[in-house]
Image (cartoon, rainbow, N blue to C red):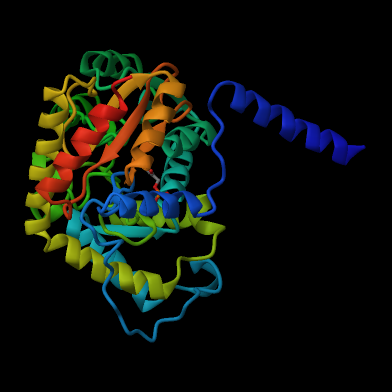
Length: 385
Ligand SMILES: Cc1ncc(COP(=O)(O)O)c(C=O)c1O
């Protein structure tokens, strides 16, 4: 009886998703193979405009001999840190100009652990309406009062900061480069507002690290702004896997004790930590790739704009979203692109607001100008009807 109820619950949920063109079919790898086959038939290469491997380091990893253990075997509170964890954390802290860093098994885990631990009773979280699910989930798990601030709206933020006077603490939470819109806040203005109201600025640089700023140190570094707490990702431009929180030594000790996704989870693989440190060094030194990425992004944006496509306003950098609105329209555009050997992500609610479904294109440093031209032509054709 229970099993029947369970099956019908799954069926009903999946049917609802299907009816709204919101069902994601689990991928068995065949989609990618068929896109590669389509490209080959047309005598071209598969063009992947769907991953976050902005600098091309995930696809073309370094080979690294190491004696580091494959698994950490327990959480760090139980089994201790390895030299690979500590060295990676030093490298990350130095990259973003922080006193210290703490490694998490993913950036999702970092955000959930960080925000839920900081959001003590009596504190207020002011969160941009386009913030990533992991920041939202952290706020939901916290005991703080969470208020959503309209996307990039500094005057709304200023009002919300006025209204939180008397709270035990106030956390202003934003991404520095929004993963679905490809836009970003005025970080200097946010810093000034936080200083005026004794609030703490928390910046998720997941999509900005490696891409913007001197040595790829992110948008805070680019703007000369010091976030109180910076979150970074290793699974995007760095090209490996994991996430981290950077800030003061005191913050690190706080998280070591209070971030439940750190305390109650097996530490990341030491072997992976060793590889990640090498990848971070590569990303820091990748000025030539960053320049290629910037010029490729500008070329794609200019060509799509010239073709009259509805691009996200105020966007910049390698995330180029073509906002088509309806779920079915985005799905069929992505399907048409696959037929010509191009992988592009159809992004639908709940990842983006209802009615704002989009084709999310991610530019890579490794694309050639000819490939960008092929991409923009194909996207224009796929979105035409
Ligand atoms: C802004 C932001 N933060 C955090 C994450 C989670 O990163 P991870 O894949 O390392 O868990 C993402 C992932 O897409 C993201 O876009």
